[in-house]
Image (tube, rainbow, N blue to C red; front, side):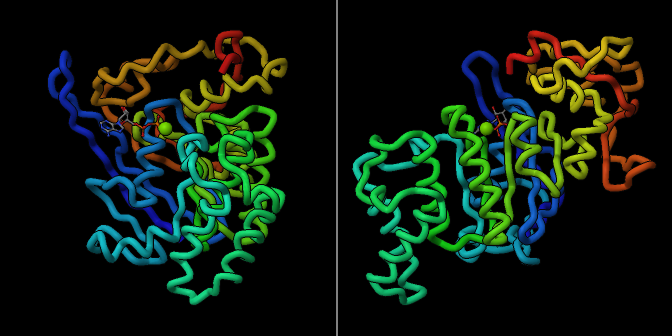
Length: 337
Ligand SMILES: Nc1ncnc2c1ncn2[C@@H]1O[C@H](COP(=O)(O)OP(=O)(O)O)[C@@H](O)[C@H]1O
Ligand SMILES: [Mg+2]
């Protein structure tokens, strides 16, 4: 349904102390999101995840590459002609608190976009009310929620309202950017399983963006996982093979921060250390991860590797000069994620 080819986005900013600064938020990202399929992007803060989510939903422009929705290249269309394509792709962003207008009740929050939609579909007032009730049920909220204001709802319930509102326009894809990171841990699984359910029952494609391996794994089941580092995808493939047999040291470091792996690891010569903080200013012509990589050799600083398929599995690709399985050791520091 969505095909992104070599999408780049560069920000140039002027800081008070730093002078002109160029940030390569995305450096040529490619992916295909099939109809009803799932693709997840995982990476630490600042790697370009939100920029990607905004580009895919039309909230941010891109400076290079092509974005195709159902085969139509949006980079060739005017902003006005792009709008109907972007409406099929709805963003669920990370903060359900700021996403909802506190002065309107849920009935109004869902009613406004349903009324707009009715101008195209010709739905009557009664049909709009029925649709609002149907959407509430679909996202697992009681009918009484229609009369509630956002402050009367829990974080998980608010995120369900945000999802219901996104569904008012009958989208074909949802882009979920850290959609559960700001809600209480006890409610996360409910919202994640709702997203998974929408994909299974309604065939809505799901692009899931997160810094958390466990959620990427849960939602990306049967789909592709892309690991992104400083705007570049450095490993990608079927979710299970990337999670179970990561070959890029960065992916291995990310996975080592998963508490669930603790207890399974063995210390060895390939022991991973917790990563030092990301320093945006480190410029390198070589591998972007080399300055922080425990396994970097001199060659890694020379040229930047592109994605290469693993001989054993053509769908699993990596951008590393030294791809190999390593035992993942979660240290105390890395486990506190
Ligand atoms: N509007 C902007 N102006 C300048 N720099 C930006 C802007 N938005 C994002 N960036 C920079 O682009 C990089 C990627 O940001 P973002 O996409 O928000 O990452 P993530 O969501 O993975 O944390 C960061 O270095 C960030 O500082
Ligand atoms: Mg973000």
